[in-house]
Image 1: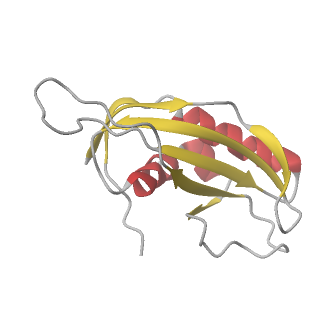
Image 2: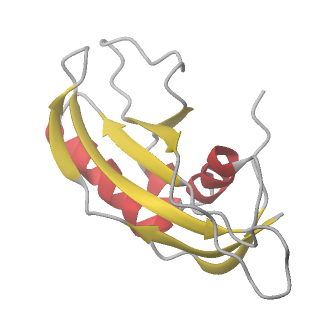
Length: 142
């Protein structure tokens, strides 16, 4: 389990055009303020998989830039989450090392239509941007 002080949305979902397969993309960024762990993407997966709005949309989730994305003829909307370096971590007076890291995630919703991509992006934004003072267990990725 990893303790999250917060997940802070850095911006609101916005249209950034078409991906390499001509699918609309709507993206946003968020920053975690959390205890040190090496499983940031897997922890975000746990939060999204347990969100009724995301599950109801029937979306799929892909982690990292090397994920095999669905072919263009697939009608399912999906999220791609990539991790980026954030600012240096926060220290506390009682620890010699970093108490909280601040990684950044770039979340991109893609779908056959702009409306579907926008709906999925806003659902992910709503789920993740309210996380405060929460322990999160990472989802095991095969």
